[in-house]
Image 1 (tube, rainbow, N blue to C red):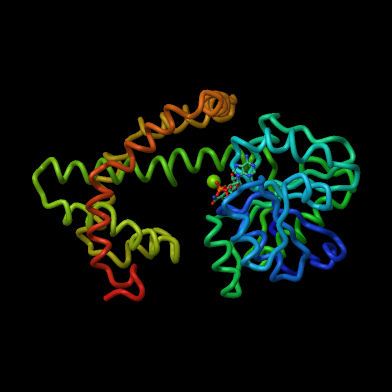
Image 2 (cartoon, rainbow, N blue to C red):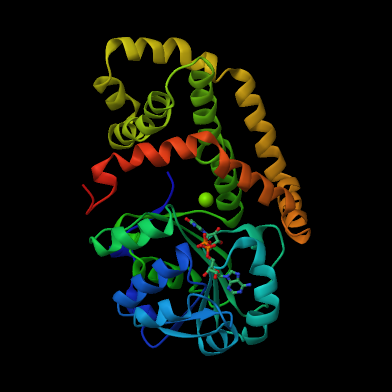
Amino acid sequence: MAKIFYDSDTDLSLLKGKKVGVIGFGSQGHAHALNLHDSGVEVAVGLYPGSKSWSAVQASGLKVGTVDDVSRDSDIIMILVPDQVQKQVYDDHIAPYLTPGKTLMFAHGFNIHFGRIQAPEGVDVSMIAPKGPGHLVRRVYTEGGGVPGLVAIHQDASETALQTALAYGKGIGAARSGILMTTFLEETETDLFGEQAILCGGLTQMILNAFETLIEAGYQPESAYFETFHEVKLIVDLMYEGGMAKMRDSISDTAEYGDYTRGPRVSPPSQKAEMKKILEEIQSGQFAREWILENQAGQPHFRALRRRGAEHMIEQVGGEVRKMMGWLNPGKK
Ligand code: NAD
Ligand code: MG
């Protein structure tokens, strides 16, 4: 069984007297910084000069400085800028201040696992990766809970890297739900695979295929949206609460029969074969090389894909349909 750490296995007092620098104030950055601050940890946020987030950090009562200043002053530095810019930010603004005894932390293993960032000896390198988007990491914490997380140690110069990382995990609330022990390799490869094969890539493409099938057959776009997009969350919520069994208990027998007999046709063995290829591209470093090159070229393909995604009819239809849903628009009738 995997090792899981909870609040009682972790000691927040290990961060007493230590300064934590959170680099970046985006999805993860704002959540980590605010949660740590509310847990009583001394936090400063590092931004590039001129960043839009400067006033937002100040308004939330946290210290803010340039990445250089915060890296110089911090004992623990958590890098929460996008993965594709981490190497440059690290090389220019963090590495010069990594003196022995400091801790360098990540929320995803990409740059360490693929060898983009190599920290000096004498520095601890660890990961606390919440298994949820940053806005949830913040919201669940303020409600008294925590989004579960992963912990991994790449370099243990102090021989206390794990306890320090777990204290950080407790500070952001993750230990309230559990922090699972993993490695940088396992976190990086499974995280990339999950987002490509199912969570993001797999799911969005399946929704689009189903939506387009109904539209091309002449059904109303609003009906197609409800059936192929809106209801996905309702079904996933049931599976999340009680497994596939709870979902199948709650749907009609007709739906359950269709599930068993048609599902395997939509996702035939060829789909799994393709997933294996995608996993191999991750394991071999081919995907990482492709993404690094795309960034070096200024993201032309990525930007085109992003534009095409935003222009799809399902987004316009969804925007209109969601206006009708009072519970998605608090304060509006
Ligand atoms: P983000 O894109 O939301 O935020 C990035 C922040 O970095 C912003 O504040 C931006 O202004 C700043 N930034 C961008 N370029 C910069 C530069 N050159 N110098 C300094 N600051 C710069 O990023 P994110 O999604 O929070 O991802 C941060 C890390 O967390 C990544 O390693 C990611 O893999 C990991 N992670 C993200 C999520 C998630 O839900 N978004 C979940 C788990 C792990
Ligand atoms: Mg992920």
